Length: 417
Image 1 (cartoon, rainbow, N blue to C red):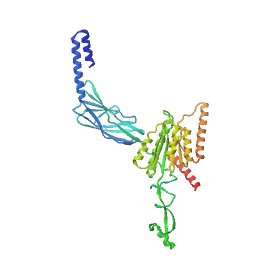
Image 2: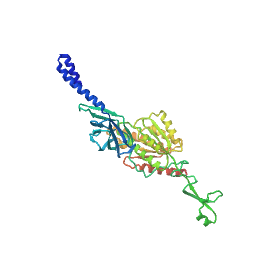
Image 3: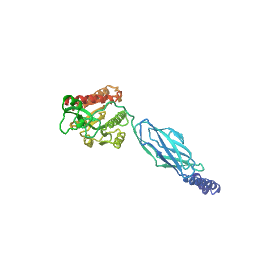
Image 4: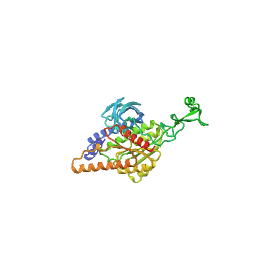
């Protein structure tokens, strides 16, 4: 069409009709192409798509393309977010990494895609850009379909063979054995029969030997409140971001393990802001926890109101497990405040020393030694206040720090009686 307008302008300028005839021909072809292209209304919609995925998993996505009439050759650009990749295509040809060639789309054309995902977080597919050739093949008509999907990608399962047990339990039924006695299945002791005791609790074997009635006492099964405190305070864009990745992976494994024990779960995340979800149960509640967990972004917290929010969210009788590299002394201060409030809290320190390059100059070596001494002072401050701290090195299994914390807590519980 531009060539046609240029031809008309030249004809007017020179006063010759020949350029006008050429320009008119181009204009007619352009108008026909535009009119035909506007009639080609190709649409895209999802007919099958997962809501959530597990890292490194492959799932099938089905797309349906349709048009009002017989369309010309059509291309679809899917606009996949980083981390998603197309593994296999059925019903179209893959060009590059994100473009599908569909051919002539009629009333309905279904395409099945096998999508692979790498890395936890939120991943998007869409909106879908559609390019359809005009009837004369002069240009492509571009349309954007508003269809898009957001997937919650959960970190790969980390098998944990050891979990911490809360010191205080709730009245809700769970897998924990209460220290108190009452209705339950865990045997506690024997005592003499009293009027009003349930006859089903009579131990007939012991009663027949002693000549008097004896009843079994049992521990009731309870559950506990478990609140995870995930610290994402590292400098964005550095190699220290891997510490946040390790915290999120261990946090997801702890949520899954404690959910199987029917514990009430809560979550506090410290990154750019302080967000928290109070303890609760149910599949929808656990989904909210996972979505908040994988939304952790490395950043610095505004501590004016964060400490009050943490203390409000992690109150007794909850057991708090803090996953932190202890790079900010404010975090140690909050943990210390929780312990003084009587909260049962343990710390898994994500080891940061392995992610730092070794110092080369003498002044840097001195600075590194001071940094190591400061971290040791933070640990001693916490352990002196009764907070168990276990360092999780990158070469160790996550069961190693959990086992250390369990031994520390068991010894401390025996000392308290």
